[in-house]
Length: 245
Image (cartoon, rainbow, N blue to C red; front, side, top):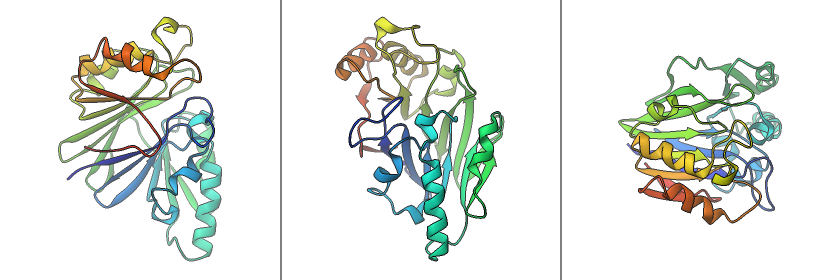
């Protein structure tokens, strides 16, 4: 069984015109799962999936560029249920290490569910696992596995050796690249492109996609800097770009 992953949003901090911040749509085993739901996501998501077909949302952390559109999605779930298009509340999964977790529940229309970062979260044959990142607020990288296929999403983190093992042998590694190498360490809690490439190389990843990109400079330089460390297939995330894992 394959995993299809589609880029819904890829900017860091705030969306550029006609774009969105962090969000990816995972489709496997007959399920549609949104990973993160940043600013502008709801508009773009509907290009790839009717909102009533969304089964669940899994959130890495509660910074606005990863959850800003949760509120609009909750309103959408309410209208869909009122109109009979959605039969069950939308399940929104997030960690319980932040008081903002309580916002994931919205009346009877959306149910916030705390995942345990030390346990496997299962959606049918899809198995999610988590690893803490290095960030000012609690944040978790996400690994999704289906029948031996491995997708890893690493967002908002400084360097952490444990993430190498977490991403081991990933068929597809989506990794934040908020900084050009010359800014490495200047902004705490974020990776440079070279660090993303090093992480991919040390993990033995097959394919690297850079996301959470900065609002300055030439993004092709990020690829060059990642390529100095990672000799495999690497590219920049882009709206609507999909991969089969």
